[in-house]
Length: 258
Image 1: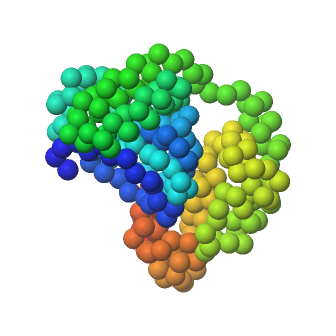
Image 2: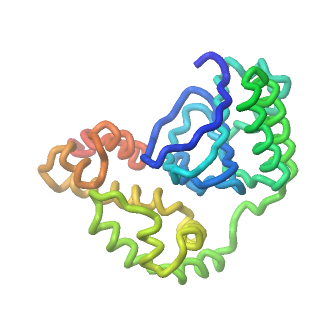
């Protein structure tokens, strides 16, 4: 990709994991998408957006009803924006940022303009990035939550029951709605409580637990890596190997030989 891309789309319900050589901004005007960047995850909605710098691995899964604005900015295109210096600061690190009502209204309006006048996408992208910069660097959010808050949310979840369900369905698709039902919570309430309690989104937690089981199988079984990948819910050995290396900083093949 040599030029920036600004588009509206509905992010797929099928899990996707990849990385790319360009920066990416994701804003939703409706619906929700589970998204994690290098293991840190959140639920992208009209209240929360995401900044993904180039070369950061990320995974996402939409709800099928989301309406999402995606801006891709190759490093070679940074200089074409009047706010190039601000862009460097915006994409200095991955970030999940609060979307103010004003920014959300602007994103919705710009989405409509983009669909009506695609030839104005550079002007629309510049206005969006400038507004985002002002929104992000005017906000004042606490860096961390008190430990008492984490304990409070953890008390509302049955982590042992959740773990047992994950372990019993390692090779199956596990939905947030299923885990929420185990705790008699709505999906939204469960997601917020789970993230406060564990520091991870449910999807990130499920994948982490799958890989912990995979590590034991790699070290202590004679199953092939393809068989292990299938047992813990990966569609192919390549995606399993990449996920394993991201978490344990070693490939399963090298880990087995160690």
